[in-house]
Length: 479
Ligand code: 4AD
Ligand code: MG
Image 1: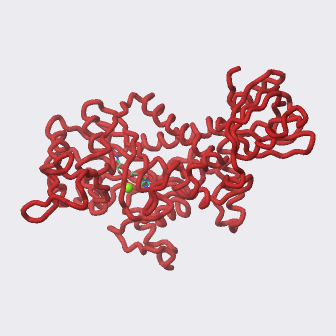
Image 2: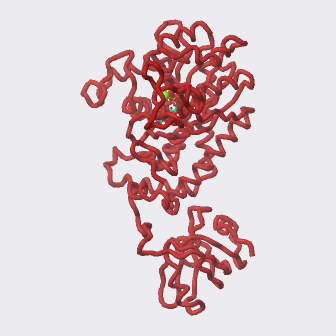
């Protein structure tokens, strides 16, 4: 008999039919006559209730049906009288596939803290919370590809090992095969990278954008969805050293078009989650309510479904950085010293506390800020005529702060090269990037969505370490 997944059994409601299921035991309870086993196979948040009449089975087998063990069960499906489920499987055959030593198994049938579960990330998929997040993450990956594919965008794999620093921020992990104990040196004593694997110094990419731009200059609309690496030493609940980013790049798009696409994209993903991940979202919503119940009413996060719908129905507020600075400079929080970083005026970089103030307190909806000072943005952004600002756009979300960063790109060869020289980007090494501005240059724009930041938002989780299976953060690269 072919194994059936629990998701299919629960949705099909095939009462009276015989099925074979396989999975892991979540809990077992009961008495001398009858045992109830909650079985989960990861296909759904729901467990299948297995009813076992004790005298039909070997005692030695039943003893091995414990939390964590993997089992195979054949039996008939019945309508359930018990609360909590409407279908149950009455077992006729039972096979222990893999035993589990309950004294050693760290996942007891009780609530574990997220901190503890991070230490056993190899097992945390077996909890309801982490399997729900994994399924939602999968659905969101699928929705990303679906969204762009349906609009005729071409997915481009950009390199993971590069020799350029796309963001010019210098937060890179070096890639080398040189022997760190015996580094080759040149005449002036510097490390001689001509002896390295690629004959030059290389690093893990911080963004696929620059290569994405090359492809957009022929294919018009492209997107990348790849891992990116940043060696910024920020141990926050919003930063990872390895994260996934979606970066569309569109020829003939100006900043307005870019904002429209980003807003449509985010709303599409949220709608997709609401339409396709309902059971998992309902579970996470209940989880969040429990979590927040300890807090004061005014400090509690918005209920998850409500929050998702809220973003869906509201138009994002669009304003310039300078307008935002005026609001922030004059707000009570700034004057009373409630912000950790005081907003002095034009030129101040926005921290997530400021971004969240604008979104959560002032506008009470997602915000798109444009036209940032060039001094706090990357070299490739299109320069405005004022000589001070660039055509940047950041999208700010409740709970998260910056979720998207993007811009219209500088398509003018002279202006781009001048800016690169100003901020010490090695112009010679970037000849290939500059070539696009020499051969049929066009206005173009793009943005980057941090996938884990988005996952934080859609799952209502609070720490970015909990929405990627195996987080990489400073001093942590386990598993
Ligand atoms: O704003 P960023 O640095 O922009 C870029 O990399 C551009 N090349 C994107 C583009 O225009 N194609 O990063 C984009 C997004 C941020 O808004 C944030 O959501 C996420 O990537 N991000 C991080 N997510 C997790 N951990 C980190 N350390 C992150 N750094 C950025
Ligand atoms: Mg940014």
